[in-house]
Image (cartoon, rainbow, N blue to C red; front, top):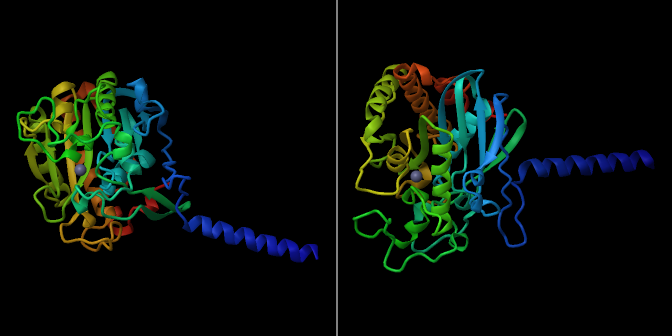
Length: 365
Ligand SMILES: [Zn+2]
Protein backbone atom coordinates (compact mmCIF):
# COMPACT_ATOMS: atom_id res chain seq x y z
CA UNK A 1 0.00 0.00 0.00
CA UNK A 2 2.74 2.37 1.04
CA UNK A 3 4.70 1.48 -2.07
CA UNK A 4 1.74 2.16 -4.36
CA UNK A 5 1.04 5.47 -2.62
CA UNK A 6 4.69 6.50 -3.09
CA UNK A 7 4.58 5.67 -6.77
CA UNK A 8 1.36 7.65 -7.18
CA UNK A 9 2.87 10.56 -5.27
CA UNK A 10 6.04 10.39 -7.33
CA UNK A 11 4.00 10.34 -10.55
CA UNK A 12 1.99 13.36 -9.34
CA UNK A 13 5.17 15.23 -8.46
CA UNK A 14 6.78 14.42 -11.80
CA UNK A 15 3.62 15.53 -13.58
CA UNK A 16 3.59 18.81 -11.62
CA UNK A 17 7.26 19.36 -12.43
CA UNK A 18 6.60 18.74 -16.11
CA UNK A 19 3.68 21.21 -16.10
CA UNK A 20 5.82 23.69 -14.18
CA UNK A 21 8.55 23.44 -16.80
CA UNK A 22 6.08 24.21 -19.60
CA UNK A 23 4.16 27.07 -18.01
CA UNK A 24 5.23 30.69 -17.72
CA UNK A 25 5.09 32.37 -14.30
CA UNK A 26 1.69 33.17 -12.81
CA UNK A 27 -0.46 36.28 -12.91
CA UNK A 28 -1.40 38.14 -9.74
CA UNK A 29 -4.92 38.87 -8.48
CA UNK A 30 -5.15 41.89 -10.80
CA UNK A 31 -4.23 39.81 -13.84
CA UNK A 32 -0.76 41.33 -14.02
CA UNK A 33 2.07 38.96 -14.72
CA UNK A 34 4.44 38.55 -11.83
CA UNK A 35 7.74 39.66 -13.25
CA UNK A 36 10.63 37.96 -11.55
CA UNK A 37 13.01 38.29 -14.50
CA UNK A 38 14.76 34.96 -14.36
CA UNK A 39 18.27 36.09 -15.31
CA UNK A 40 21.33 34.04 -14.31
CA UNK A 41 24.51 36.16 -14.36
CA UNK A 42 27.97 34.93 -15.37
CA UNK A 43 30.74 34.36 -12.83
CA UNK A 44 32.12 37.83 -13.65
CA UNK A 45 29.22 39.42 -11.71
CA UNK A 46 30.62 41.62 -8.94
CA UNK A 47 27.44 43.30 -7.65
CA UNK A 48 23.85 44.16 -8.44
CA UNK A 49 21.97 47.37 -7.87
CA UNK A 50 18.77 49.14 -8.94
CA UNK A 51 17.90 52.18 -11.00
CA UNK A 52 16.48 53.61 -7.76
CA UNK A 53 20.06 53.72 -6.38
CA UNK A 54 20.50 56.68 -8.76
CA UNK A 55 17.08 58.24 -8.20
CA UNK A 56 15.59 57.05 -4.88
CA UNK A 57 12.03 58.18 -5.73
CA UNK A 58 11.91 55.26 -8.18
CA UNK A 59 12.14 52.77 -5.30
CA UNK A 60 8.98 50.71 -4.94
CA UNK A 61 7.60 51.84 -8.32
CA UNK A 62 7.10 49.58 -11.36
CA UNK A 63 9.82 51.63 -13.09
CA UNK A 64 12.59 50.37 -10.83
CA UNK A 65 14.83 47.84 -12.58
CA UNK A 66 17.83 45.75 -11.69
CA UNK A 67 21.37 46.80 -12.65
CA UNK A 68 24.13 44.16 -13.03
CA UNK A 69 27.85 44.97 -12.67
CA UNK A 70 30.67 42.85 -14.10
CA UNK A 71 34.24 43.81 -13.37
CA UNK A 72 37.65 42.59 -14.51
CA UNK A 73 40.82 42.39 -12.42
CA UNK A 74 42.47 45.13 -14.48
CA UNK A 75 40.92 48.60 -14.36
CA UNK A 76 39.80 50.17 -17.63
CA UNK A 77 36.76 51.75 -19.23
CA UNK A 78 33.06 51.16 -18.52
CA UNK A 79 30.61 49.73 -21.05
CA UNK A 80 26.85 50.17 -20.45
CA UNK A 81 24.46 47.81 -22.23
CA UNK A 82 20.69 48.31 -22.05
CA UNK A 83 17.77 46.37 -23.49
CA UNK A 84 14.03 46.79 -23.13
CA UNK A 85 13.72 50.52 -23.73
CA UNK A 86 10.88 49.11 -25.85
CA UNK A 87 9.80 45.90 -24.16
CA UNK A 88 8.28 44.44 -27.34
CA UNK A 89 11.76 44.52 -28.93
CA UNK A 90 12.72 41.15 -27.52
CA UNK A 91 16.09 40.74 -29.23
CA UNK A 92 17.22 43.91 -27.48
CA UNK A 93 16.30 42.44 -24.11
CA UNK A 94 17.80 39.05 -24.99
CA UNK A 95 21.08 40.57 -26.29
CA UNK A 96 21.49 42.29 -22.91
CA UNK A 97 20.56 39.03 -21.12
CA UNK A 98 23.08 37.09 -23.24
CA UNK A 99 25.79 39.57 -22.27
CA UNK A 100 24.71 39.26 -18.60
CA UNK A 101 24.77 35.44 -18.61
CA UNK A 102 27.97 34.82 -20.62
CA UNK A 103 30.39 37.72 -20.32
CA UNK A 104 33.88 37.26 -18.90
CA UNK A 105 35.60 40.55 -18.17
CA UNK A 106 39.35 40.89 -18.45
CA UNK A 107 39.82 44.68 -18.46
CA UNK A 108 37.37 47.35 -17.33
CA UNK A 109 33.76 46.68 -16.50
CA UNK A 110 30.33 46.16 -18.00
CA UNK A 111 27.02 47.38 -16.58
CA UNK A 112 23.88 45.67 -17.90
CA UNK A 113 20.24 46.72 -17.51
CA UNK A 114 18.13 44.18 -19.43
CA UNK A 115 14.82 46.00 -18.79
CA UNK A 116 15.35 49.74 -19.06
CA UNK A 117 11.57 50.33 -18.98
CA UNK A 118 10.27 47.77 -16.51
CA UNK A 119 6.73 49.18 -16.64
CA UNK A 120 6.59 48.55 -20.40
CA UNK A 121 7.57 44.93 -19.73
CA UNK A 122 4.43 44.51 -17.66
CA UNK A 123 2.17 46.48 -20.02
CA UNK A 124 -0.35 44.02 -21.47
CA UNK A 125 -2.73 46.71 -22.72
CA UNK A 126 -3.68 46.76 -26.39
CA UNK A 127 -4.11 50.50 -26.73
CA UNK A 128 -6.31 51.66 -29.62
CA UNK A 129 -4.34 54.89 -30.15
CA UNK A 130 -1.03 53.05 -30.50
CA UNK A 131 -0.04 51.34 -33.78
CA UNK A 132 -0.58 47.56 -33.73
CA UNK A 133 3.15 46.76 -33.98
CA UNK A 134 3.85 48.44 -30.64
CA UNK A 135 2.27 45.63 -28.63
CA UNK A 136 1.85 42.76 -31.11
CA UNK A 137 3.56 39.52 -30.10
CA UNK A 138 3.49 36.86 -27.42
CA UNK A 139 3.36 37.61 -23.68
CA UNK A 140 6.39 35.40 -23.12
CA UNK A 141 8.98 33.62 -25.19
CA UNK A 142 10.31 30.18 -24.20
CA UNK A 143 13.88 29.03 -24.82
CA UNK A 144 15.34 25.60 -24.16
CA UNK A 145 18.58 26.06 -22.25
CA UNK A 146 21.06 23.62 -20.63
CA UNK A 147 19.10 24.01 -17.36
CA UNK A 148 15.70 23.43 -18.97
CA UNK A 149 12.97 25.56 -20.51
CA UNK A 150 13.12 29.22 -19.50
CA UNK A 151 10.66 32.06 -20.08
CA UNK A 152 11.37 35.69 -20.91
CA UNK A 153 8.77 38.45 -20.81
CA UNK A 154 7.64 40.20 -23.97
CA UNK A 155 5.99 43.55 -23.34
CA UNK A 156 4.85 46.77 -24.98
CA UNK A 157 6.58 49.79 -26.52
CA UNK A 158 5.20 52.11 -23.84
CA UNK A 159 4.90 52.48 -20.08
CA UNK A 160 1.56 51.27 -18.74
CA UNK A 161 -0.89 54.20 -18.77
CA UNK A 162 -2.05 53.16 -15.29
CA UNK A 163 1.52 53.34 -13.99
CA UNK A 164 2.60 56.55 -15.75
CA UNK A 165 0.78 58.51 -13.02
CA UNK A 166 -0.19 61.40 -15.33
CA UNK A 167 -2.62 61.13 -18.27
CA UNK A 168 -1.26 61.42 -21.81
CA UNK A 169 -1.22 65.12 -22.84
CA UNK A 170 -4.26 66.32 -24.77
CA UNK A 171 -3.08 67.56 -28.16
CA UNK A 172 -0.03 65.30 -28.27
CA UNK A 173 3.36 64.94 -26.62
CA UNK A 174 6.02 67.58 -26.99
CA UNK A 175 9.47 67.03 -25.43
CA UNK A 176 10.18 70.05 -23.22
CA UNK A 177 13.24 71.03 -25.31
CA UNK A 178 11.75 70.24 -28.72
CA UNK A 179 10.77 72.78 -31.35
CA UNK A 180 9.15 70.09 -33.48
CA UNK A 181 5.44 69.39 -34.00
CA UNK A 182 3.69 67.36 -31.28
CA UNK A 183 4.01 63.58 -31.42
CA UNK A 184 1.11 61.21 -30.71
CA UNK A 185 -0.07 61.59 -27.11
CA UNK A 186 1.04 58.07 -26.06
CA UNK A 187 4.66 59.00 -26.90
CA UNK A 188 4.60 60.65 -23.43
CA UNK A 189 5.07 57.06 -22.23
CA UNK A 190 7.86 56.19 -24.70
CA UNK A 191 11.17 56.03 -22.79
CA UNK A 192 13.04 56.80 -25.99
CA UNK A 193 11.37 60.22 -26.23
CA UNK A 194 11.90 61.10 -22.57
CA UNK A 195 15.65 61.71 -22.06
CA UNK A 196 17.29 63.41 -20.25
CA UNK A 197 14.26 62.83 -18.05
CA UNK A 198 12.51 64.82 -15.35
CA UNK A 199 11.63 64.33 -11.71
CA UNK A 200 8.38 66.36 -11.88
CA UNK A 201 6.58 64.38 -14.57
CA UNK A 202 5.39 60.85 -15.35
CA UNK A 203 7.02 57.52 -14.48
CA UNK A 204 8.67 57.30 -17.94
CA UNK A 205 10.40 60.65 -17.40
CA UNK A 206 11.56 59.52 -13.96
CA UNK A 207 13.02 56.30 -15.39
CA UNK A 208 14.89 58.35 -18.00
CA UNK A 209 16.21 60.62 -15.25
CA UNK A 210 17.50 57.61 -13.26
CA UNK A 211 19.23 56.08 -16.29
CA UNK A 212 20.92 59.39 -17.06
CA UNK A 213 22.05 59.66 -13.42
CA UNK A 214 23.51 56.12 -13.63
CA UNK A 215 25.49 56.95 -16.79
CA UNK A 216 26.95 60.04 -15.09
CA UNK A 217 27.67 58.51 -11.68
CA UNK A 218 29.27 55.36 -13.09
CA UNK A 219 31.30 57.43 -15.57
CA UNK A 220 30.19 55.27 -18.48
CA UNK A 221 32.52 55.49 -21.49
CA UNK A 222 30.54 53.52 -24.10
CA UNK A 223 26.75 53.12 -23.96
CA UNK A 224 24.51 50.86 -26.06
CA UNK A 225 20.71 50.88 -26.31
CA UNK A 226 19.45 47.73 -28.08
CA UNK A 227 16.26 48.04 -30.17
CA UNK A 228 14.23 46.31 -32.86
CA UNK A 229 12.34 47.66 -35.86
CA UNK A 230 10.05 46.85 -38.77
CA UNK A 231 11.39 44.08 -41.05
CA UNK A 232 12.64 45.64 -44.29
CA UNK A 233 12.11 49.17 -42.95
CA UNK A 234 14.63 52.00 -42.87
CA UNK A 235 15.79 51.26 -39.32
CA UNK A 236 16.33 47.48 -39.61
CA UNK A 237 20.01 46.60 -39.12
CA UNK A 238 20.86 50.23 -38.43
CA UNK A 239 23.47 51.59 -36.04
CA UNK A 240 22.71 55.11 -34.84
CA UNK A 241 25.56 57.04 -33.25
CA UNK A 242 25.78 60.35 -31.49
CA UNK A 243 27.65 62.72 -33.88
CA UNK A 244 30.49 63.08 -31.34
CA UNK A 245 31.31 59.37 -31.71
CA UNK A 246 30.32 58.80 -35.34
CA UNK A 247 33.98 58.01 -36.19
CA UNK A 248 33.97 55.04 -33.81
CA UNK A 249 30.69 53.77 -35.29
CA UNK A 250 32.00 54.11 -38.87
CA UNK A 251 35.15 52.10 -38.10
CA UNK A 252 33.09 49.47 -36.24
CA UNK A 253 30.61 49.07 -39.13
CA UNK A 254 33.50 48.51 -41.57
CA UNK A 255 35.06 45.95 -39.22
CA UNK A 256 31.76 44.06 -38.81
CA UNK A 257 31.47 43.92 -42.60
CA UNK A 258 35.05 42.62 -42.96
CA UNK A 259 34.79 40.10 -40.10
CA UNK A 260 31.25 38.78 -40.58
CA UNK A 261 30.09 39.96 -44.01
CA UNK A 262 27.26 41.72 -42.15
CA UNK A 263 26.29 45.18 -43.40
CA UNK A 264 25.00 47.73 -40.92
CA UNK A 265 23.40 50.95 -42.09
CA UNK A 266 24.82 53.91 -40.17
CA UNK A 267 23.18 57.20 -39.17
CA UNK A 268 24.16 60.03 -36.83
CA UNK A 269 21.57 61.17 -34.26
CA UNK A 270 19.24 63.88 -35.53
CA UNK A 271 20.12 66.54 -32.96
CA UNK A 272 16.80 68.39 -33.54
CA UNK A 273 14.74 65.32 -32.57
CA UNK A 274 14.81 65.37 -28.79
CA UNK A 275 14.52 62.69 -26.14
CA UNK A 276 16.26 59.73 -27.83
CA UNK A 277 18.90 57.75 -25.96
CA UNK A 278 21.79 58.05 -28.43
CA UNK A 279 21.17 61.80 -28.79
CA UNK A 280 20.69 62.71 -25.13
CA UNK A 281 23.08 60.22 -23.48
CA UNK A 282 25.83 61.50 -25.78
CA UNK A 283 24.93 65.16 -25.20
CA UNK A 284 24.55 65.10 -21.40
CA UNK A 285 27.24 62.57 -20.40
CA UNK A 286 30.78 61.64 -21.46
CA UNK A 287 29.57 58.34 -22.91
CA UNK A 288 30.08 57.54 -26.58
CA UNK A 289 26.48 56.59 -27.36
CA UNK A 290 25.06 54.08 -29.80
CA UNK A 291 21.74 52.44 -30.66
CA UNK A 292 21.32 49.29 -32.73
CA UNK A 293 18.15 48.05 -34.45
CA UNK A 294 17.36 44.51 -35.64
CA UNK A 295 14.33 43.36 -37.71
CA UNK A 296 11.60 41.84 -35.47
CA UNK A 297 9.06 39.71 -37.43
CA UNK A 298 6.21 40.83 -35.12
CA UNK A 299 6.96 44.48 -35.93
CA UNK A 300 6.59 44.05 -39.70
CA UNK A 301 3.68 46.24 -40.87
CA UNK A 302 1.91 43.26 -42.47
CA UNK A 303 2.59 40.88 -39.55
CA UNK A 304 -0.14 39.29 -37.44
CA UNK A 305 -0.18 37.72 -33.98
CA UNK A 306 1.21 34.50 -35.40
CA UNK A 307 4.60 36.05 -36.23
CA UNK A 308 7.29 33.82 -34.69
CA UNK A 309 9.66 36.14 -32.86
CA UNK A 310 12.02 33.28 -31.92
CA UNK A 311 12.19 30.88 -34.88
CA UNK A 312 11.32 33.06 -37.88
CA UNK A 313 13.34 31.55 -40.77
CA UNK A 314 14.59 34.89 -42.15
CA UNK A 315 15.18 36.73 -38.88
CA UNK A 316 15.51 34.25 -36.02
CA UNK A 317 16.07 35.61 -32.51
CA UNK A 318 19.60 34.17 -32.40
CA UNK A 319 20.63 36.16 -35.51
CA UNK A 320 19.15 39.36 -34.08
CA UNK A 321 20.89 38.85 -30.73
CA UNK A 322 24.16 38.06 -32.56
CA UNK A 323 23.76 41.29 -34.55
CA UNK A 324 23.59 43.44 -31.40
CA UNK A 325 26.54 41.59 -29.88
CA UNK A 326 28.89 41.92 -32.90
CA UNK A 327 28.06 45.63 -33.05
CA UNK A 328 28.91 46.04 -29.37
CA UNK A 329 32.12 44.04 -29.67
CA UNK A 330 33.26 46.01 -32.74
CA UNK A 331 32.56 49.39 -31.13
CA UNK A 332 34.31 48.40 -27.89
CA UNK A 333 37.37 47.22 -29.83
CA UNK A 334 37.63 50.49 -31.79
CA UNK A 335 37.05 52.54 -28.62
CA UNK A 336 39.74 50.57 -26.74
CA UNK A 337 42.26 51.11 -29.53
CA UNK A 338 41.55 54.85 -29.48
CA UNK A 339 41.60 55.07 -25.66
CA UNK A 340 44.11 52.50 -24.30
CA UNK A 341 43.74 53.91 -20.78
CA UNK A 342 39.98 53.14 -20.93
CA UNK A 343 40.24 49.74 -22.57
CA UNK A 344 37.36 47.31 -22.19
CA UNK A 345 38.26 43.68 -22.89
CA UNK A 346 35.71 40.90 -22.56
CA UNK A 347 35.21 37.38 -23.87
CA UNK A 348 32.78 34.53 -23.28
CA UNK A 349 29.84 35.81 -25.32
CA UNK A 350 28.67 33.26 -27.92
CA UNK A 351 30.26 33.59 -31.36
CA UNK A 352 28.14 34.92 -34.24
CA UNK A 353 28.49 31.69 -36.25
CA UNK A 354 27.60 29.53 -33.23
CA UNK A 355 24.43 31.52 -32.50
CA UNK A 356 23.35 31.19 -36.13
CA UNK A 357 24.05 27.46 -36.09
CA UNK A 358 22.69 26.46 -32.66
CA UNK A 359 20.21 29.16 -31.65
CA UNK A 360 20.35 31.19 -28.42
CA UNK A 361 19.08 28.70 -25.81
CA UNK A 362 22.23 26.54 -25.58
CA UNK A 363 24.32 29.58 -24.56
CA UNK A 364 22.15 30.74 -21.67
CA UNK A 365 22.59 29.38 -18.14
ZN1 LIG B 1 12.84 50.61 -30.12
